[in-house]
Amino acid sequence: MKIILTFALMVLLAGCQSMPDKQTGVAQNLVFLSAQHCLNEYLDDLEKVHYGPCLKVIEVDGESPTPGPDGFIRLPVAAPLTINTSCVYRHADGTPIPATVETATFTVTPQTFTEPGVRWYLHANTRARGVVGCQPTLSRSTYPTYETD
Image 1 (cartoon, rainbow, N blue to C red):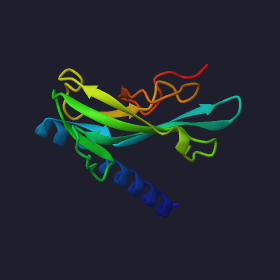
Image 2 (cartoon, rainbow, N blue to C red):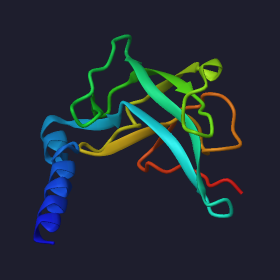
Image 3 (cartoon, rainbow, N blue to C red):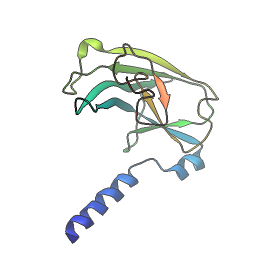
Image 4 (tube, rainbow, N blue to C red):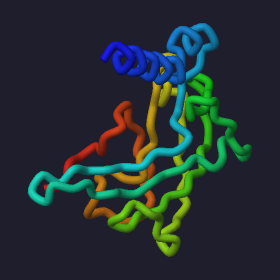
């Protein structure tokens, strides 16, 4: 039992260390944007996960981004940027549907990121299901903006 608790603590600490450091972001006047993110929604009535669309950041101001080991891209605070994204919808087993790949641009204004050290996610859409197309939606949460009725 002691070994299991020690292992669980090690995993927890390793996970925390891989997240972007708020103090570093504040010191360097940066925000952290997830390089890729997939939406999911748990369906209580069916007792299963619905795999929603995924979004990947493919360019920031015309350059390929270099995510850190934590999977986040470092971006300057209060700076205008153009972020190009690629979205793909997924089959019921979570695998991508190649025919649904779309690209879209997300425009960052000087008012978009105003607080350094904060983690952000770009969602492919506002919901995990019942939506179509690539509509990048900025969020502080890994969860969809709206649950599906």
